[in-house]
Length: 163
Image (spheres, rainbow, N blue to C red):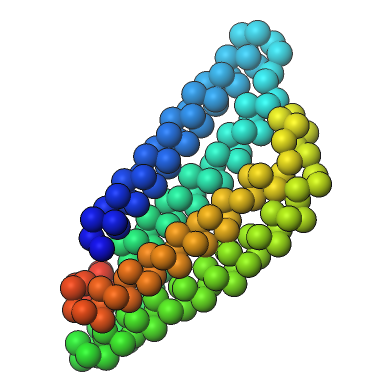
């Protein structure tokens, strides 16, 4: 299971990194065409905004993998290790529910809805770019299940709760 997580983390890191590099290159291209060629490239600006969304969602999935999502540790810090474990599992269940309802279900619905709408410069269906939502929803759900298994087995340190 750790090897599967490591491979998935590596893949997401590569995708997020490639997205970031592409954003930098496209932004430089945008600056070049705007200030030197006096003919701004509208497609690159539009693509950068979509790549930013994808990179952000991939990064959010990586954070879910590390159990680095937002929490308020003030009460958890005072609890016993057993209660901490159950609170951590509860937190993962909440993250799973959010991913299932908002990202997966909502992402599928908005993607279907936006398939008829075309981007202004790229000429691609907007729904294609929204597919990042359900993809990351599935990734987050997978990661939360892996996190719960690790927590249940005691293989995951609860030190992240203390941070």
